[in-house]
Amino acid sequence: MDAAASGRPMLTSRPMNPRAFFPLAPCLIAFALAACATEAPTPLPEPVAEAETPLPEPIEEPAGPAPLAPVPSPPEQRPEAPAEVADPAIPRPQRIANFVDYAVRTHGVDANRVREVLAQAQVRQSILDAMSRPAERTRTWAEYRPIFLNDARIRGGREFYARHRAALDRIAAASGVPAEYIVAIIGVETSYGGFTGNHRILDALYTLAFDHAPRAPFFAAELAHLFALEKDEPSLDILALRGSYAGAMGLGQFMPSSYRLWAKDGDGDGHRNLIDNLDDVFASIANYFVVFGWERGGPVVARATRDPGAEDFKPETLDPVHRLEELAARGYRPQPGEPVAEGATLLTLEGPAGPEYWLGYRNFFVITRYNRSPMYALAVHQLAQEIRAGSGTGGQ
Image 1 (cartoon, rainbow, N blue to C red):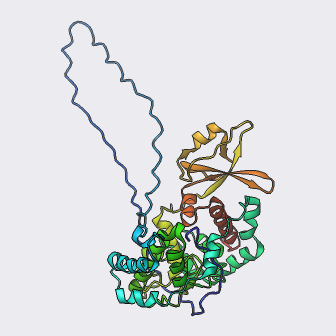
Image 2 (image 1 turned 90 degrees about the horizontal axis):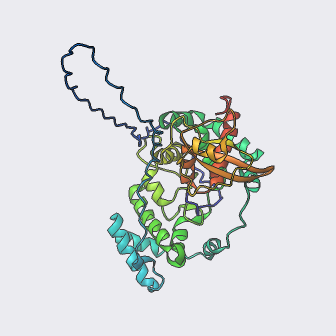
C-alpha cells in the first residue's frame, strides 16, 4: 500500500470467511450554496401625455465556467516520530528508550509490553539491503504493463472474482467501488494472496526505525502504530505477523497506520483481520478508496489524442484540476467514445507503439493514493477491466 511497501510471499492458511458485509460509512457529502437578492422597484411617476419610455433591459455579464469541484481533502497526515526517536546521532539505547515513551504517550500502549516485544526484535540486514538498493532503471509503460497485464494475472483475477463474487458484489454495492478494482488491487499487490511477504513485520519496522536513517521518522511512527494495532485488535499476534520488507501486511498490503485508520470489519465479527479474512480485506480496500474520494459510477481514465504540433504538457500534479476545454486548447482531447469528466490530468507514457496519451479523472487520482505511481494506477485500471470483461457482466 505504501509506495515502499512491496513484498511477495505465501498467505497465512486460515479458512476464508466471506459473510455479511458491515456497511461502509459514507465519507463525502455533496453540497451547493446559492444566493439571490431582489429589491422592490421604485414606483414610476404617473404618465402625462405620452406613454412611458420602456426601461432598458439589464445587461447580463457573460457567465464564466463554473469552478471545478474541489479534489476531496485527503485524510490528515499521519505524524512522524520526533527527532528524539529517529535522530541517528542519539545513542541507540537512548533512542529505543525514547521510542517507548513516544509510543506510550502517543497511543496509550503499555510500556512493559513495548519493552518486552522490542527485546525480541531483530535487525535484518536483508531488509537494509533491500531499502538501500539503488533504484531500478525507470521502466517505460511498455515494459511495466506486461508485469501485471499478462494471461496468468488476468486469469487469476477472473477466477478469484468468480470464487468470491457474492462478497465482492455486496461490498461493491455498499461502497460504490466496483468489485473488479478491489480484485485488481489484490492482484497487483500480492497476486491474489499468493505473495504477501515473508518478513516478520516487527523486525522490518524495528530495523528501519533504528537502522535506516533516511526514513527513520516514518518507520518509527509505523512501529508505534504496530503496538497500537495490537491494542486495537488483540486477536493479532504482532510477534507472528509477516509481510513486506517495509512492514506492509495482508492481501492488500496495509501499513500499520493504514490498518488502524481505514481497515473495516467486513463480516461483523467485531474484529478487523486483513491477514486472512477476505470479508475484511475487501471492505478495507473499498473503504480506502472511499476515504480518498472515490466517485460512485465515475470514470477512471480516457485515451486521448494529441493534435499535430501540440506542445508537450506535463502537469505538475496528478490532481484532476484541468478542464477538458483547457486540455483541448493545448491539443489534447478524449478519443471518440471515451468517457469524459469535468476535471482531469494528462499522462504521457511510452507504449509499445510510441507515445500514449491518457486523461486521468478523479477516480484515477484516488488509485494513486494507494500507490503514487501513475503507471501502477493505470495497470490496476486495465487489469480491472480485463477481470470485468471475463466476468460475464461486460466491461465498463
